[in-house]
Image (cartoon, rainbow, N blue to C red; front, side, top):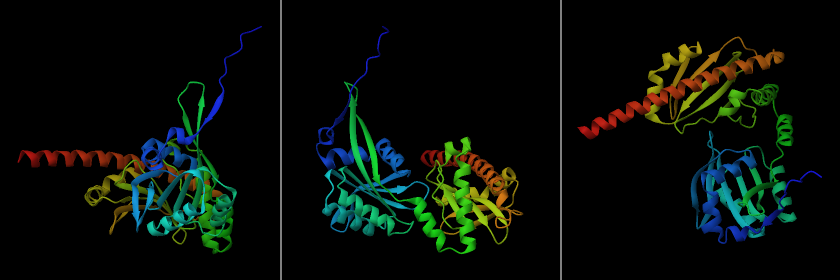
Length: 325
């Protein structure tokens, strides 16, 4: 008889044995980059920490975060026990106080009445708000290290929301929403794009933004149904880097083969539009249009990485000269 492989037994670990104190142990662990990334993956949201024990009047939210590549604020409330009405009230208070678009309630165990409450909130709020109820679990096999796992038990039904949103839209609005839904599906097939970017939830608007591996800027995909255009944009939040990018506009135009339209407002940036792409009249050409936009955005990303590296070298030299002087 052939030797049988030795198999271990999966055991569930009490979360309080791992994190005895919610604030001092669990919240500190969850605020770490790797832990927050794990939670974000479970909720399909890329999270960036802003603050812990962040003030909301006389209260404090455990973790205050932001969705990477957008200005959507996220509040995370932890409860290493069964859910209760007190914490349900807290998450709504914190969301209102912080102007949050996403609420994540992390718990040891979700009671049915609170699962129903979160489901109700998602059904009766629009796509600008999202409520997640997430159970934290810890597992171990034999003497191996313990492994945490986030189990999302309630989340927004994006398909239902999209159908609800479509019903109240104009024809142009429906076309925009459907175009971006097609883009999300098409982008998932582009391996190079998928390694760099994670598409946002489709909206009935003329743009959809993308995160970038930088806090100085983000990139945007554009459509203009009236002018029959598709395009891309770099939007720079850092004033000095924004000036640097605007000064190098010709290089970006040469790389993309398109004239750019600069702007200098609260943010600074350049939009690049390509004409002759009628989204309304050529639905069958959407995959072709989207593939072109993906190619354009990858080129723009490469150029922005190059410009940011150059900018940092210039800044470094300027700082060195200032010190020497």
